[in-house]
Image 1 (spheres, rainbow, N blue to C red):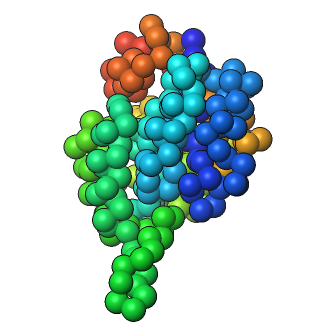
Image 2: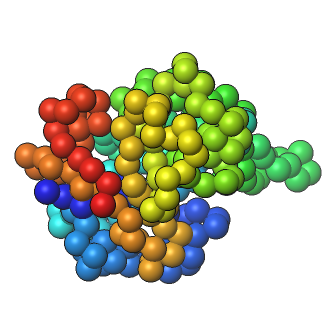
Length: 223
């Protein structure tokens, strides 16, 4: 059995603490008994490789992103490998708002909304072999419920994420989608405060993917 926190930010996210360095994140994850983590910075996957290198096999580090759609819905994207994440990240970056100075493109708002619709975002994630999760669905802002009031039938989510021990919106538990729990940690003390337990043969992408997509061939539950 492996404890998994599938939504952790590094200091690359503008809203995260400067203490969220690869070394500090790995140390906190190990201290709290996590075996699997996913690095999901806002609209970029650039830091995941550094965290994976720092972990040096001591825990499985999954590359990911927290993408903000045009509707300002946050979607957690989990990918099988760093190359897939970076390729998808390039498309996300190209859809971000930018600031111009003297006619030169010089800044990207990493945490701003992209021009990608929810449907386009999920399609992009899956085109790169990833899993699309409705991020922090139990929160009153930047969730699919807060922005749209419901989950569209054709949204294409693979799972729903909760970040606190709450019942969430009424429709949260009747969607038929798997529910995972993640910390969405922006500070070190939040890492692993809530997590999902996976029962797997070993902590690798194929096993996590099978758990979330197979409907019972691998077990997992919210702790």
